[in-house]
Image (cartoon, rainbow, N blue to C red; front, side, top):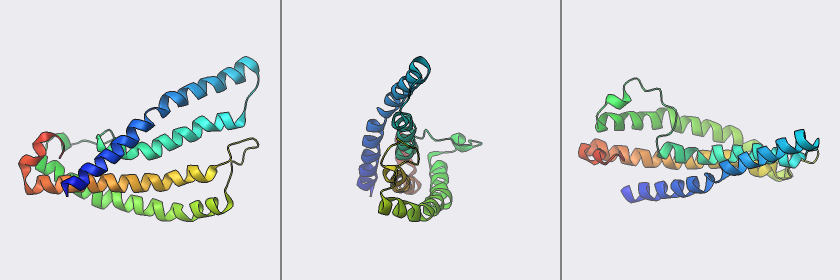
Length: 173
């Protein structure tokens, strides 16, 4: 099972490393849009949309990478004071009670809209906007799938720590 967790972690690490390059690209596009708008009194709707859409894609598809590296927001009242086994229990409960139900709800609510978007090959409602809104909407399913996989990795590692508390001492549990 640990090999499966390693595979999931490598997948999300690879995606995260690729997506990191999106942030400087977003900043560059945003600067170009501002320079064109305020310096030359011109603009291109597709260019303005591109950095917003790219930011949405980076955020949704990179969330599993953030969870993998514990970069997510955590209201930490006592977590850091727990043993590796205590943290593992919190991770199991949090994944099963909060993460998976939220992902299920989001995926089932998003699915009909994504299907509709693909069937119409939906484009931006903005004149001159980007022609592939359906791809952006599909990022919601990517978000759900990648986070569900990372949740599975977290569950596997947490169960290993619960069964063998010394397994969590390497910082991965």
